[in-house]
Length: 331
Ligand SMILES: Cc1ncc(COP(=O)(O)O)c(C=O)c1O
Image (cartoon, rainbow, N blue to C red; front, top):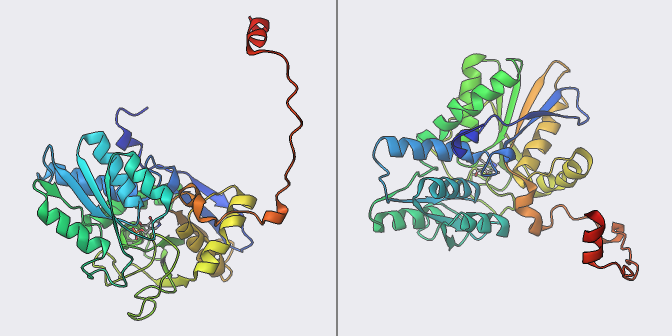
């Protein structure tokens, strides 16, 4: 029982995933956080720190750039604590994520998908500009704020360590800002330097293409510039995944394993699955499943082939019993 919704963030389940690998694979179901993603942790940490240190004052406005999930988390926290929230997003965002942010009462500013974050039209540049122009406002600035990483260091890392009882050997998470992998990864390596920390990136990202990024469909994940939030000292390997591979595994995860997860979780699952082929049965692999597939249903990543859908024509309606009769019978 919690007095405060934000205390319900974290303590998400770690569930075995039976894929055909020698190693043991476990998925950390971060979509079960109240705001629906792993980003509840970093948003809460940065905002509570800003309130404590006076950067965010009563009646203030919180502004941030987000691929959607940080925005939803920020909007949820703003709704609970009584702050106005403005979130800048890029055109790539799913309708579901957009409407989720709006449902929490936040204002959304749509920006074009730009190749670089310092483009004045990018969602990051626009958020910075709005923050400068808005009195009594605060920008968590997840792409540049080291507290983003710290949020995961103090919550996600310890949970994974405790849930695996210290047996974890490999940690996989998608990297966008890099906060999740760097924060939780640092904590795990401090407990046991032998834990391998592996980041997932898009094959088309700025980093993966040596500064010549191409568009990609996976949301939230992809190292799109030299983010100061990423701590490469704790990352042992970076695995790149194509849209096809990340999206291709989503149907299997949902229909064969009951895990309806978003595209970045598809990338993590695919990357970890391939990687784990070389591991042994004593290896314990933890994968961060950052958000739910429910946030992407309109993108049709999960739809069955139309030919496999059985359409059954319902029989004509013959019920002559009125609602009143039904009601009377049950009395
Ligand atoms: C679903 C999902 N997975 C992974 C990430 C990447 O997390 P991070 O920004 O901590 O690197 C994000 C970031 O928004 C996300 O929304």
